[in-house]
Length: 202
Image 1: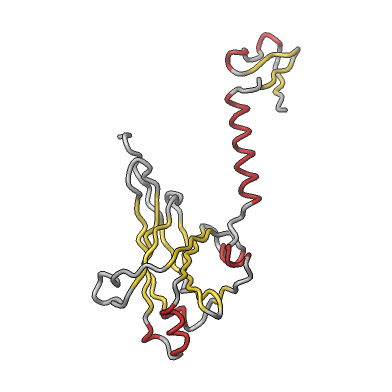
Image 2: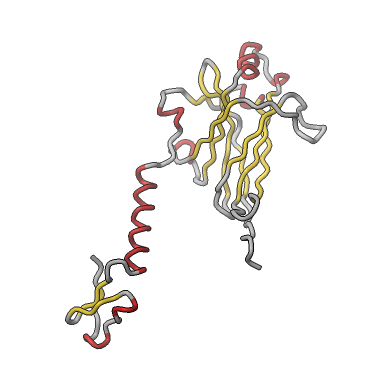
């Protein structure tokens, strides 16, 4: 219970404004906007503490392999943008292609090409992947054309949209491909989310 000391009973805030005077104290009335705000903030804090965004793959014991030769073969391109109205929240369109010409290991190249399970991690924290403070988004394989630019790899590619990001934030992302050895991670890329206009507000 929050209490605020008032100079006198007469100077306590009125009940109609969400406060009730008791002697020389004023306290928030149940159901007042202030009490509701405090409750919402407390719930949000508890959710963040209880669910720090640890990868489901880590929970299952599947290793994440970083810094392998596969990282260079997973060619990634990021395109942050605004979602369609009325939400208009920042989102990330991420595309990736397997360039087997960058691999000297035929078995690893074959495993990457044959995989049908992909994952995209995003974090807004420095060293978020190491600390476990990131979000994971998974999807099954969907083959699409390669990158539109002719100087990029033109093999079969894949894409994913990561929604509901925060505006004007530096994020780090990576693509992971599930193989018999574990999740093969691409190199990490940074991107900056735009500030999106809200539909109906000029």
